[in-house]
Length: 153
Image (cartoon, rainbow, N blue to C red):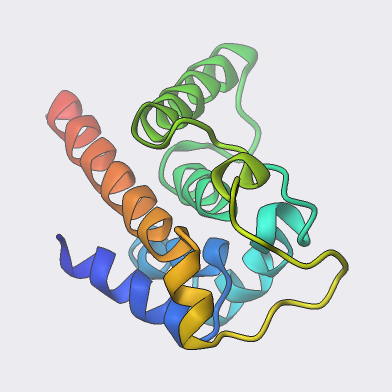
């Protein structure tokens, strides 16, 4: 397990949401200050505002990929290349975890509906895979970055 992966797990356990925890460990090296990264990624926890859609860890990974690879006003060809990267990251996460959808990843876990996050108790961490999903997204993105840098050099 990498240092970034451990740091992301610590962020999650300290109260940051899943997307914040992933983006938070990459933001500064990718040119974004931590406070701004936390604001940008704040809406993506719980599968986008607790709607249980795309897993927040995956959204955080995609935001990091945007910082790492996207331009400001990319051409259609460049956008296509970037979307190819995003689809590859999603595939890697899905291959490891079976889905990129929060509600599917939480299947069998009793959750509450609504907008209020559940209290972060010891039982919360025992019953949810979220800490490990944070770690998975960080490790997938770290590996992807290494592979991308080796292609450039």
